[in-house]
View 1: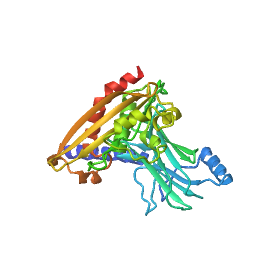
View 2: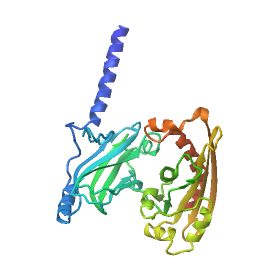
View 3: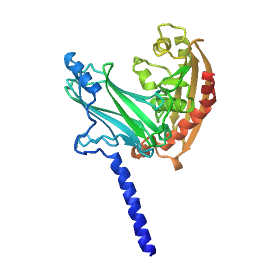
Length: 344
């Protein structure tokens, strides 16, 4: 009797899980099974043909992208336990001067993540992808309908919606402050572990999750407007202060372009330095754009030991390595209260 009950229960579990998996699969799975063309997509391609712009051939939000096999299945629903959501696109009539952008928006309408691609080679066709972490980061908690805008040379080609977890409903965000997060400056000479871009991104994500009235300009969006500059780690604070006095410098024109009220930027020193510990020191500056000055300086220190950390393992982890997250969470905890006061 007990054996029969176990068999029935096992069958129910398989049936339930099978149904869940089936719901996540495309209705007609096949090689290169992307989303169906929308009116917006059709209209964009018409515009592209008339104006010699890149033509969009394929779009899919997916779990895994396999360029060589060509097997890319479109998913409309993702689980909070999925490592990431990836968007893959295929184009033709491409030029080396083209710029492709991907903007991921939260269910409340705020920009969460930004990615871009600018060709370095002159290919007529391109397969371009971008991705957003889910598991162990904030999207696993922000369940609902997300969307990603696919943009070519400043024009939206298509908008792809997808859900993460439960399809919860959110009111449109009513923001009163815009904060720009710059990429952090790594100490190029001393740091053996780089954090610059991903640390800035994490601070932006955490700021959005913890502050419903703040809008964030992410570091990758800001970085596309910053020309390569040889910033000096040791004199970084003095460079910021000098730049804030220059109307034509780096900070003020960007603040004007994106209507930023405050800016968060900083520098990182992270390495083994010949010892048994990996020491990370993060110095963060909060800038009031209107006052043209640094209003807060926050220093965060964190130590990891060889016994519990091996940098090489980061390449075997899907998503952000947990030891990076330990550091980034510590940095944000030191910033959290100060960021909350920006919208008061």
